[in-house]
Length: 166
Length: 115
Image (cartoon, rainbow over all chains, first blue to last red; front, side, top):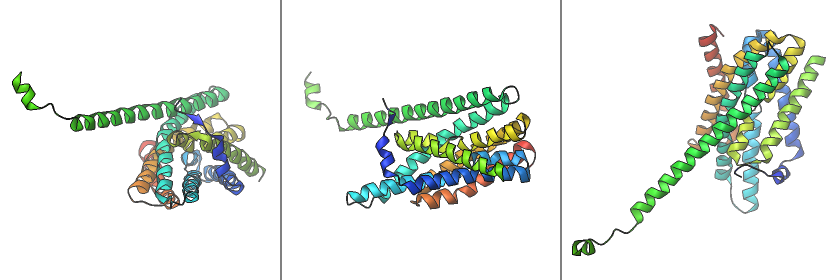
């Protein structure tokens, strides 16, 4: 299976990092409510997709990778940046899921609130995971083509002499 | 005051839950899906339905679509700043917030007839 759960990753985190995330998440939710109250639900709604917690998450990912590499005596800055970029690439795909969440929720909420929450969350998960699977398939196909192309050029050509003798 | 405290607690719990799920999942690109999870939206829309009504939540979630499109641009910008400009994650993600703000308000203005 391509997707796996690695509970050991939680050991990399420090307790204050979880407190920061909790506080940022709570603060973002309060701020969104206050913006909606002051400027109306249309402007407030935009902030439901604000990447408020994203800054903290991506910074922690970078810090964890750097810490891990430093334990091995390496600088780890490049590795940290790459890990953060990979997470961000996932967020690009996740934003399609978020778009689906918003579209489904706004369509269903006036007929059934419970159904809107369930259907919108399902839509988010399905669209995000499908987008990720498609991207992965395309990347694997591109890598396979690249490797095959390299093999073709490195393969020794049959000697012309033996062909002429035939 | 009570509403803000409830919002804070619900938002904190949902955001932390999605963040922990993202932490334990591999590969990293898959875990990144949870970085763009509608965690703040779930908390805010839940409170909006209770304190206002479904129509209010519908308006909010309709606008959220523009925010989500802006989030896509934001994430692409952060990715580019990290890999091409070799910026640190905090600087890149903070700098790109301007892209999110301009894109979200711009899309709202264009498609909803005024920000």
